[in-house]
Image (cartoon, rainbow, N blue to C red; front, side, top):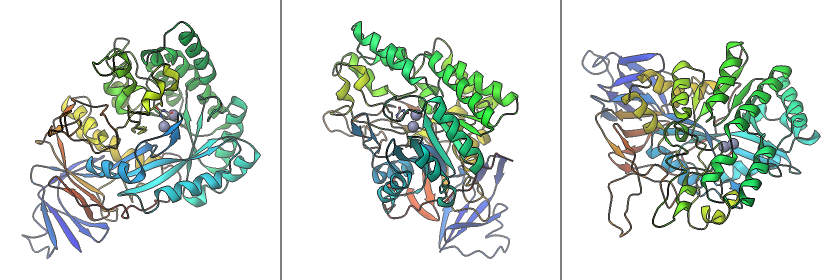
Length: 485
Ligand code: DUC
Ligand code: ZN
Ligand code: ZN
């Protein structure tokens, strides 16, 4: 089966070129000068020809931070692997890296096996895992030795969530020593959890129980401090470090400082920290929910103050490469029965926002707004995640030999984000395929559109129709990070 994509502008992280792209089976096999494949005797006979005139032909998006059906906050993230990866495909993402979970007292191997069971045969797109080590002890440290052979070359610890996933400094130090030995990337949720819990308790005791105070309790100082501590522990152990979901400008300054000193420290932010704020979303109220409306945007790290310049600093970090990655931390919960758990106390609101469908579009809007270049867009949504997590060459680039994970993106198109039906059941013309009863991105308008999503040569989305299946996605065994020497 051969597919030829003609007349498009191929955009890679390295630049743009007019080229026709030939796919054979699951792989990209050739790039031709415009028209050469057909007009000048290239001799290509394709089963399918897709005309991409006026459109960008880019590598499929890679979202390196998702939590499909994660048990968290007394409930489970509302997207299963099936619903979440289907939504991802609609939005131009062709690979996710989700988090397999181990908690204190559990075996790492069991957590990993469970995640394979949940995802296997249920994904529309390719997937891989990072390993959460929620309980660092002799057993889990020993089990880390098996991860690289399993194709899992990154693991995550939490400096937050005491009693759930929390690792103290001694545990972090031991895990980083092991990671250094094995070449694993340490991913860190960097917030000072014990101090945050005290602040939260004090706020609740003062009657400050609405979701807004989630953002106050999780003060930026708690993110800056934990980020610095993680950097110093990584420095001491010579372990590469990747800070997840950064939102505080002072924490980004810590990463920039470390990088300027040539340390292997990397930073990730998320669309919510680029566009959504403490003032607007955590300060929201509605007729239906009153001040509890803001629960829609309770996530950790929290949305930060736009007035204090945090959002602007995230964009700046992406431009200057102080931040290298944009993942979603996709962890959706419905308002009904899930976010509602925290109706009387913000501490009981399950933390998380759903965005896996919209990351490619939301970042493209950054190109339209003049914040990042076209090639930087592709680098952020696909190429850097592939290199960071050991998949580049197979993923993250439009070139011969790579998997045919391709998105045809229309810069003249338009995407209205939001629930597809209004309260009376009428169509809104908006897009939202995630399994949530609201959209955290309701009302966002994108000056661009994912026209076609192709995963390993198979068209998953085209002309507004879904052609995928839950059995298509395959587990990707990853190599070590390609940013390390
Ligand atoms: N933060 C979230 O918002 N959700 C899942 C876990 C996390 O750290
Ligand atoms: Zn986290
Ligand atoms: Zn997360």
